[in-house]
Length: 593
Image (cartoon, rainbow, N blue to C red; front, side, top):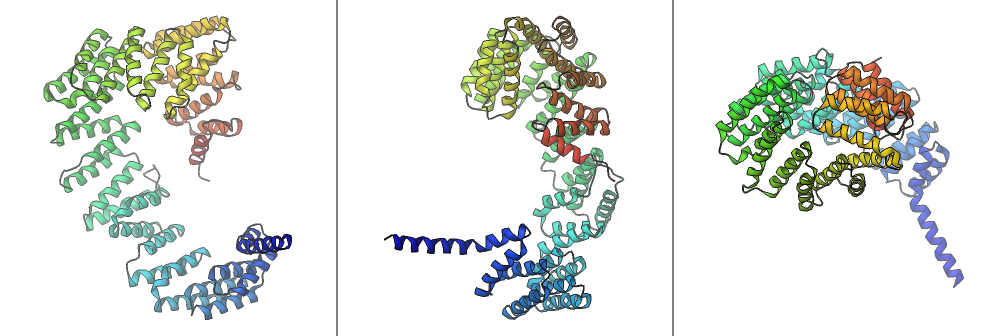
């Protein structure tokens, strides 16, 4: 019995090792142990010479060992087996090339091309084989044969890639555009390919080549594709006005059916700081759309833009704009979100909390969907917090939390319950709510909960720390109430009274954020610098470094300085949540050599 077990175990082991042999050989090859790889491939090949994959691996191993004659023998055996398979002539030519036998190599490559003339369906594979050995002209010939015989999108894409490698950018762009003409669903694939060459600098050589090419094509053949690609190019160059012109041309030629592209363009322009063009696009939507709900959405976005950049002197004009919208579109259920927006404007900008609450409570009596009711109650609660009526606010937040317990809006409501408790100094209850939110599916809420929870925990461990935290919470409330000067004054008082306390770096961070919001960028930078200089071991150090990097890159136009901060995150804080983003930003902003 033991003997039978031993035989069974031995045979099983043999079969396992044998089955693993190609993988083992590959591993040896990748480790540079070519002699060991050769021994295994040789044995497998001798048992099954028809296995072309193994034959290729065996040939490559022999070439690494400079056993070119044996490699040639294997290639020729395969040519007999597979009746002049064109790819094998590429392998034969490369084998000659490794021996510096240039004439023989060229002849073999030519044989591959000649075989393609008879069997053009192999052209794509032969082209890829040539590319593998960086034989770009031969690859072009192979792909060209494929395209002469029939439409072959894959061959055309590879051809475009080769032109790119050869820096023949006009040919590359031409070929890619022909791909999309033939197969429109390749448009986004081509966008990714173009993005390797196109920058935000309109004077970049490749930008100029593509722009000229598209304009020429548009004159010869007015295809929508060319307008679409021009719009894409102008967006990359942050020339949103020109992109807007192209989108209008597309809209008019498509029968004026879809304004979604304008909404997207307006959003991108706003994100990139071109508020003028973004507003013009929204005005165009309001004029062009025949649909009231589309017009109202554009009106809402336009009003929000005005609010975001307004100072007190602009508020009367914004009030008139709200009145105009209500007069133009009322009654319309699509005005719901603008009514919320108006109530927030009344409360937070005009300090008319009573009027805002009255309007919202009246709106609450309407027949609303559950989601609309939740959004309305959240705003009601926000305004009650603004008015420091915490208990009433907590009722509304809790109602939303219970209604949407396991959804993002429910998690947001729970977070606001915690934040409101924090404002009123009930730190224990705030901490209880925040602990629940650590596992929130919303990463933003989870991070905010973790941050506030750590702040409370580290500043309530001793009774002597709590007065400082209460002052800090009051400063946070003033910031929420948009009383920024009062918040800064209170933070200064706190810093004078509690020097050396744990909360000091948090106070500097809050001051930096407020000044950044007020566009006092240089001043904001000085407070972030204090955190990095005086509290390098604290949890906010990497946050401050990342904020400094973004500030110098996006607001102060000091890319070199931004690079220094990104580099510090990468090397000094390798476990930071920002390290991947810092690496990406650092690579993207390395100046060309």
